[in-house]
Length: 238
Image (cartoon, rainbow, N blue to C red; front, side, top):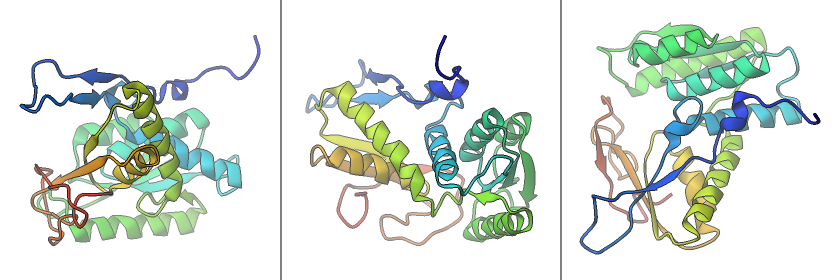
């Protein structure tokens, strides 16, 4: 037997594209769902978690025996926890009681050390995000950890370019639009870039009604209720 033994990280990506059979638009458009729940952590975020860690390993920002830190509401944290567990890096996660206990428990079960920042009545606010970022910065500085810093880390975009390639291959290029809910919008941006390198398709974002930043509104506290944002150049296009 030759080559490296496989790990659960080899199961990241190549998720199914499933056609809806009973929901059919009046114009006859074909609707397809990308089943990112098939990834090891049940989320597309594991794609970007692996990309950020591997890029840091490649250029020396993350050395053997090093550690990692990040601030996250859960999906990125669970994904980083899995990647770091497989690769053997201690991981500090800055998170909050505003996020689901299930995700916090999942991160801990995968070996992450959690640092909980208190929220205002369990809501996600701009202040909470800033407090989490600052706590992550302090930990990274004190421990000399590699800080993935997801809101600024461009290494993750490569993972979404690869996802765009998957979608293109699975649709055989028969795609006219892409719709996705957004947080930091890195995944939407990366997938849009990848698809538009092949064809000028429509890109539509979905964001919380209470924090309609992409459509020109103010940021605000929200409980993850979402609404569709029209696809126009100023608002919804990546």
